[in-house]
Length: 227
Image (tube, rainbow, N blue to C red; front, side, top):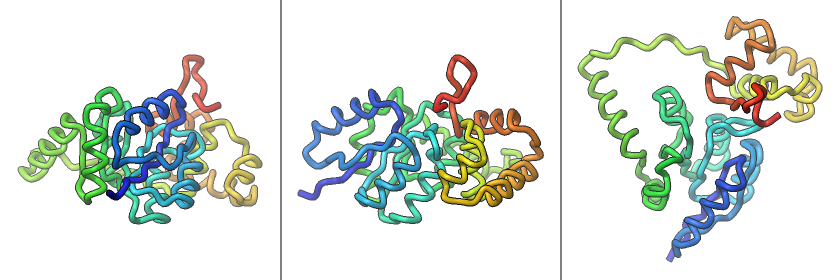
């Protein structure tokens, strides 16, 4: 029997341990590695080439959407399931656009997780029932032309997204350069490009934008949770 190899990606150890315990009950599923940040997830995916990646969205250093894109570029055979507390339309839409094959809400994931892993590994998509219903309703509205057109989204490049997240997490330009293997001058160029595209010209504004998009989470003290 072929074993479905799984990479767990979540910055909370207790969540990863819970997922491992759940998956350990299945003889055809095996956890090959665990990642605590989006950047580590990309590295481990390249190393282990898992069949399925269980990905949180609000990850330090590199958010789940960008990590999904980078993993699929490097390991196109991988299938990615988002496990998130976010259940709003924008987060789901961005996950699908990044290439995710499934999306489960953490609060109810235990009920559907095993089935989701097997389904996506077989080439199908899988969403939490509530999300699947919402997607169908949205599709029906779009087909009937009842849904108003979406405003044009600002598109940042992958590198700009990485730089934005690290700025929001409190990294200085020199630290970002070291983290991404870039020169400080290149980081400054990307930083200015992000500000110009978003029409935001201060760090506090960039932090607020990153939080609003779910790139980072804020703790009770009002600072990035990964800081």
